[in-house]
Image 1 (cartoon, rainbow, N blue to C red):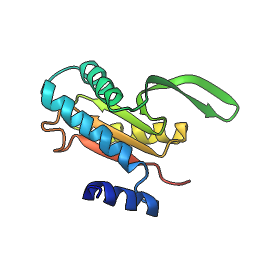
Image 2: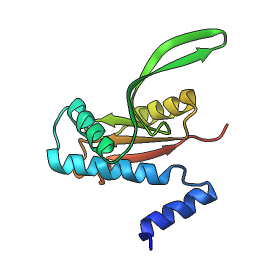
Image 3: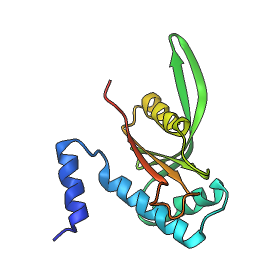
Length: 144
């Protein structure tokens, strides 16, 4: 029998109100494992490298530093942003090492979702210790 958390995630996904729940749970678990091992206080790049490694070890496909173009009318702005990670081509992961997450960080992920067409983003703040206490935000793009 499947664990309760996996059954709940699958049921929520079936209802359409928890997109990519299994992938986001796997990413969060990997991030917690990385932070527990490394501790707080490192640069974002150190957490990013270790998280990528952990996710790849778990069988995920990771794309890093993904350029994101934006369009304004007939204007095309290439590489207006760079996404930290895209996991399994469906979940955007933005990493931070800041004292606390701010609305501007959330707006950044919302913009990434809108311009990329992706549905789900994770905002992970490795400064928060432990990570699960205020360092994880799951952001779902509103339907237009």
